[in-house]
Length: 134
Image (cartoon, rainbow, N blue to C red):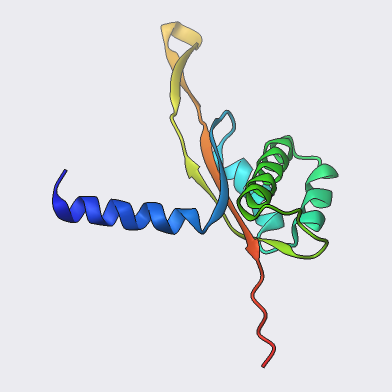
């Protein structure tokens, strides 16, 4: 590894130590369906976001709820204390496209139709909202 690359990698690792996040890779649903659920909770307080996800009819909300609970636990572990009511917020959350499995489905007259089974990766950041009381 080159010197500049090593320095930038160390800076990136140090920056991640101050961030509180959780990642879920290879979720077997399309990124588009997952983004509908993720857009519901972006910027919300975590307890309210958990309630929204719990009562959502979308199947993808179960995975996002699990991920949010993990991010909260990561925050509590790094800060050595429990999260209080109204303290933590979902600061960033994004969905990236994962591996697409390609399959064939029999079609009329000896043809085959392509089926793309999509997957996605979710990354969710939580943090305390800064006080701007000036």
